[in-house]
Length: 238
Ligand SMILES: C[S@@+](CC[C@H](N)C(=O)[O-])C[C@H]1O[C@@H](n2cnc3c(N)ncnc32)[C@H](O)[C@@H]1O
Image 1 (cartoon, rainbow, N blue to C red):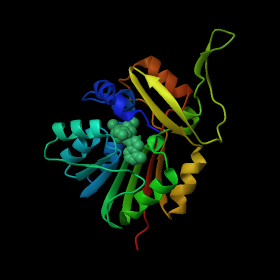
Image 2 (spheres, rainbow, N blue to C red; image 1 turned 60 degrees about the horizontal axis):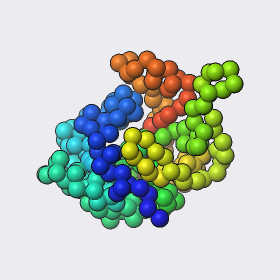
Image 3 (cartoon, helix red, strand yellow; image 1 turned 60 degrees about the vertical axis):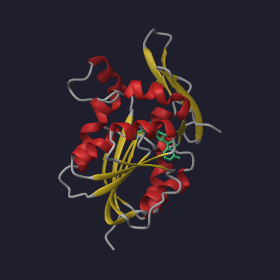
């Protein structure tokens, strides 16, 4: 079944622009970049690179990225925007790299898009060198459990955020600003169990908040409801 990405590629590219959408620009870019800068990382697959924005940011910081994505329309734009870059058609579930190839692996808001997470997380761990870092930003599971309810007006006229069926894995169609894609909800323990099952060690876990310059109403929403998680995992040195 299609996941909607090829059909939504044009709207996605417009929406994300150069600076990124709200979550990237005001919430995730800063802690993601802090964790890759000045650490001596040399090369990294960006698994589910989309139109390549984070790959370009890695390259500006001296890290050689390999963008991996199964959406042809996004890869085409990634290559146009970064003709010297390395962008390859591929799936997280079957990374075409030898074991222990990289000191850094990046998954920037892609776990929610990957259908077979039981295959993908072991693949991300497999291609990491011992001592290497797996950096993951994802939508919070409390947030993905909101489909189809989300923000609703309560009987008192106040806005409330409803979630349901939290413990059930499922894919839901999400629609916003011309984009229509299929996203996966899984409880947080599903992801944590898979990372821990690969013997990875959790070095950092954040529920990042929007920066001070973000719209105050959006900051207020993020204080009421969790939107994102950021995790830094380390593969133990051999
Ligand atoms: C929300 S976008 C994130 C793109 C990019 N990482 C960013 O932050 O701008 C999710 C991406 O995951 C890709 N994707 C979907 N299924 C995938 C899979 N099985 N393996 C790898 N990437 C996948 C989509 O094509 C899309 O580019």
